[in-house]
View 1 (tube, rainbow, N blue to C red):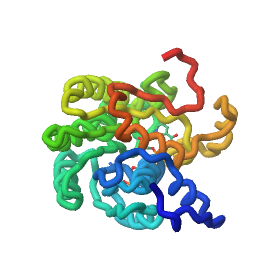
View 2 (cartoon, helix red, strand yellow):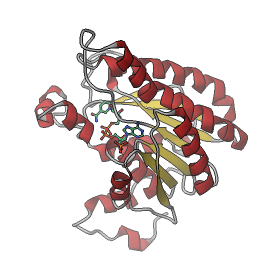
View 3 (tube, rainbow, N blue to C red):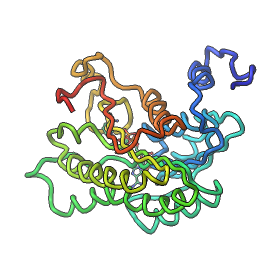
Length: 273
Ligand SMILES: NC(=O)c1ccc[n+]([C@@H]2O[C@H](COP(=O)([O-])OP(=O)(O)OC[C@H]3O[C@@H](n4cnc5c(N)ncnc54)[C@H](OP(=O)(O)O)[C@@H]3O)[C@@H](O)[C@H]2O)c1
């Protein structure tokens, strides 16, 4: 149900109108921690959740970026949103983050596990030490987050874990050897976890973004719009669309969806799986 005031259309803020009319997901009042959420896909997911009445804590490393990010969110139905500074590649900071978020929210029902991507490079240009850093950022961060939140989800017999990975899990991307390596390992971890905690009404899934217009894409490619022709839809992904799909995976009625890795790439990859 939406209150009538929230349905008025402001042409200056068309996305607010869309958010207030978004499909009812049955998660109003739930509590979410969204990491890597001061920009891009993480922020868009936080925006979609808070518009569903979910109480949200967003986390990232820069407090300035987090402060700006908060101003772009429109909480609905009494939801709250706040931020915490944390580097998720550091397991001690992850523990502290989960503790603080739990205190602020009174518990965590939904975890959106996300971080920035690792630097580009191929086999010849990438030293061993870089793998260590990338695995901490894009694999072990999510392992640490899951270790910290799963026990409380098991106790409350409800949970949603969604990791943001990459379409590179399906088709490794040239020049992104660190990302290709870390995301594949993470996907194996998540599938294993999903089966182990399904009996506790916890779902564990990953979303595999194709090319979405974010800071990350602009940092990797000088002219991201030139990539649009490589996508069957002819345009880059909209982070807000991504965010709504992520929120949908957290819906009450998505309880039978677990252990899956879903590509959001407008059909860019050729494989059947
Ligand atoms: N956009 C795409 O087309 C695409 C495609 C495939 C995969 N992906 C992957 O999807 C994820 C999100 O991408 P995006 O495009 O939204 O990236 P983005 O716009 O660069 O945003 C990354 C977010 O993560 C935060 N972050 C980075 N390192 C962090 C850390 N160590 N601890 C906590 N927060 C951290 C950043 O803020 P701070 O810097 O302040 O920490 C920022 O809020 C990345 O892993 C990316 O590689 C994206």
